[in-house]
Length: 330
Ligand code: GAL
Image (cartoon, rainbow, N blue to C red):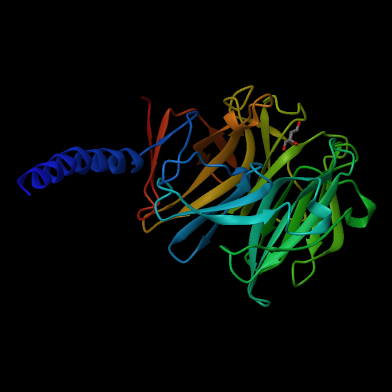
């Protein structure tokens, strides 16, 4: 009896501190750029080419997974530091046309009228990028599997790198690279967000832009895009417009010549009590070993109404309560 007691004591002494070390290890208080990010259970986060959506107190992060027949995964966090895996939203089994599909850059918005979360994404079938289609899925619950609706070419246009943007009046837009990535097309969505209603305009025809990410700040819309160099990074550029339907400004360099070795995927507003900050979210791709790809989160700085700057920071500390974002150099 005494021996059993001793064994239990030993087990307690070994595992209690170990548990504490592990939980401390998993609780993050800074975002470290360019290193592997893990969720609160210690698993590598797979949400590449992703987007973010605030629902209640939670920021949801939805992106490409690609592991074990999964296409799109969902994580959530209250502080943008500690992410909890919530499930897979689209898998190979979600629809017969997904059996050999490749899904990239999924983005989700909420439709107030239909009370549905709607996902748009880049759809390919087979090995290459020749399908060049958009695809749409929807769900009543952001954490539950989505129903895959269809893949198609909006108004017959090729559709590759893409994003969704929901304006303050509830009108939603889909942007995607068309004509072998030469053009950036902008589509207004139907009221239920399940289809493209109108090809509103083609931005920078022949400009070869992809990886679009949009935000509205003050009186201006901002769009960041990359050039077209596949998995290799290049100089990001931004443009601004007073009306989303233009005229859009010329393209202006932002960040350095490789966008700090990343490609844009989203601009995340952090709306706090003191201010609203805007975070640039980029993928640091590893095209050879896709799962070594990392994420980059950096504050976008604005000067005046339309000047935007992006600087490198080793570490970033978002404060979701105040809306401030601190930068640390090491
Ligand atoms: C990039 C694109 C990525 C992926 C990659 C494949 O240009 O932004 O989402 O499609 O090409 O080479």
